Image (cartoon, rainbow, N blue to C red; front, top):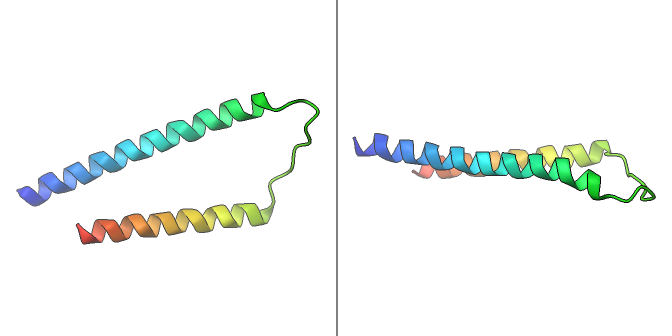
Length: 71
């Protein structure tokens, strides 16, 4: 019974963290482009940028999985 309670608590905390991060990213994507000056040059996203982002996300997921296994 205690294990199920702990598992539900971990799921709840994970869901809250995901919601906060998702809302923060959505806000940043909506607000930051509006703050740029029209004269500022926009630098395109490169394949290397996307690869680094994917690598970072995979590392984060691995870290979360490691924490899950320790519980």
